[in-house]
Image 1 (tube, rainbow, N blue to C red):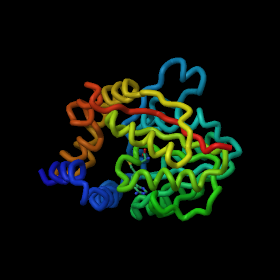
Image 2 (image 1 turned 135 degrees about the horizontal axis):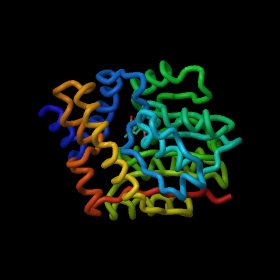
Image 3 (image 1 turned 120 degrees about the vertical axis):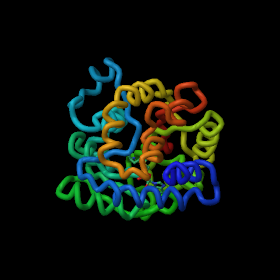
Image 4 (image 1 turned 45 degrees about the vertical axis):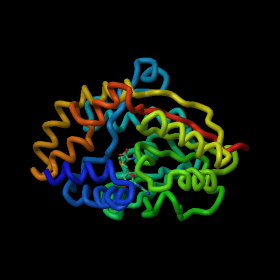
Length: 271
Ligand SMILES: C[S@@+](CC[C@H](N)C(=O)[O-])C[C@H]1O[C@@H](n2cnc3c(N)ncnc32)[C@H](O)[C@@H]1O
């Protein structure tokens, strides 16, 4: 009940939005300290062609479809030898996957939830990924610092997304690219395209991946349902079911009926 109410407030109230998201993301690592829970995205079901062209994952591994969201995004970005920043790195598993398997020159994760960063420091220590606390709208980096910025299912929650895009354009080197996946309504995607243009970024790829995400949600349903029952405190289960986008959640229904779209985009700062 309480969890559901909090979720509705997060979704509906503009004024409270940022603080409630922060509260929610600060709370997760505390109520769910499980060290193997590395991802917080809805998951991605790759096609056979992608498996062939971009490689396969261990499809028995815990949360492999959430890992796949990163794998099939970053494999396209060709990150080897490049300086990579992930904004909204969450529990850190995605950036760790990229850092350990794709050989970037550096891999930096930024997240505004101090408890998520503490989780990463504890659980991803000794890996090539580093994690810093900071806000997407005021990044603690100088201009021209990165070749690639990754952003996975995070920017819809930012208070000022136009400012985030300007920050991305600032920290990217000329020719650098933003690889982003997110879920939002058509009008909201149009706004994002407008902010990219205003920041001088060029949209060079835009693919609707909603069906890959819907399939991932459906195939992960039994595992996620059982996990929530086993690991999430009773009073938070309603909210988690929504956050996890389980079958029957508002997110799942809206994605399935086309009201919102999950897209993968690539935008480039001109060279
Ligand atoms: C749905 S989670 C996704 C996490 C991770 N990308 C993944 O796929 O597992 C969204 C993340 O964005 C972070 N976030 C939200 N607003 C932020 C902001 N203004 N600045 C930095 N991080 C933010 C949250 O703390 C959370 O970790």
